[in-house]
Amino acid sequence: DRYRAAMTPLLEAAGGFFRADFRVSEALVADDPGTNRVFVISFADEASKDAFFADPGYVRIKDEHFEGSVASVCILGSWETTA
Image (tube, rainbow, N blue to C red; front, side, top):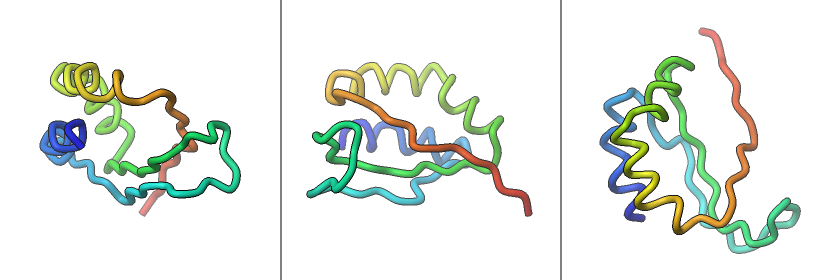
């Protein structure tokens, strides 16, 4: 929750947003049976995504609030749509 609160203003400034956010009570299939959170972050384009994740402010927030509280991360996919 602290990670989300701290990073959301930077995410929104980069044109990104949370498309979905779930607390998982039961995983039927998962590489990590301890998975308890799934979320989808969207950006207008790949350049915006890359700039956000490279932003020094975001990196500090991630180091402070995310790294110590998350045992594993699985990126399920990434894709780009065209209008």
